[in-house]
Length: 288
Image 1 (tube, one colour):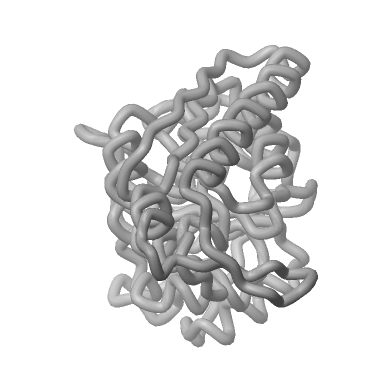
Image 2 (cartoon, one colour):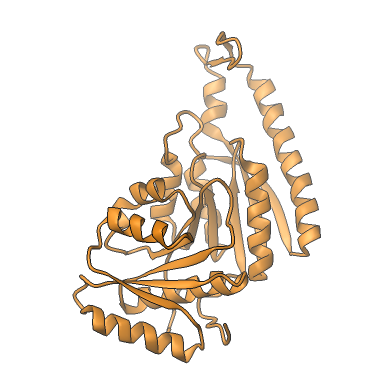
C-alpha cells in the first residue's frame, strides 16, 4: 500500500482505563497500535466517583469471591487500591512505551466515567475502549458506559475485544458519501500499519445503488494506490454482516458512526467478538 490519505490520520490515541482487571493487556494492545500508527498514546486512568461515593455509604458491602462472604467496604482501603493500581499501570506503560519508542503520557483523574472520557476525547483522534468495563457497579456483556461513550463521542472510537488485535484482515463497511470515504481512509490506515489485507463490504441495498458505490470505492482505491478486495452484500442485516465478517476471517470491522446499523451497535460488537472501529468525520474534513 502507498500514498496513504492523511485527512483522517490518527496522531493521538486516548486509552481510557478504570479498575477493570484487563487493563494490563489493554495497555499492551494500545501501545502496539500507537507504534504501528506512529501516534502518541494518552492513557487516562479514571477513579470512578460513583464507586468511591458508594463505598462511603453504611450499607455498602462487597462479596469475597472465594468465601462468598460479604463485608463492609473500607473506603480508605479502596482509595489506596485505586492509587496503587494507577501507579502499577503507569509503571507498565513506561516499559511498554519505551520498548515501542512512542510518545506517551499517563494521567489520573476522578469523576463520572462517561463525562471524564468524553471530555478527554476532545484532545485525541481515536478513543480506545474495552468491550466490557467502565461500569463499576454492574457489568453487562457490553459495558453500559462503553456503549454510551461509543455512541456519544465526537471522535472515532475503537472498541476492543479481549484486548487484542491480531494479523488478519481489516473489514470496512462502505455505505457511500463522505462518511464512507472516512471509513475507507481509516480502515486503510489500520491495514497499512501492519500489512493487513483490506476488504471493503458494500451495501447493495443503499439508495445510491451498489454499482455507484462500487465505482466510488474503486476510484478511491486507485487514486490512493491501495489494494483491497471488494465484496457486495445484498442483505445488510446484523446477522449477515457478522456471517460475512467471520467467514472472511477478519480481525477488525470499521464502520461509520452514522451507519444504518448504528442502532444495533451493541448487538454487533457482542456477536462479532472482535474489535470494532466507529469512524466519525474530523472537523473541516474534505476527502475526494
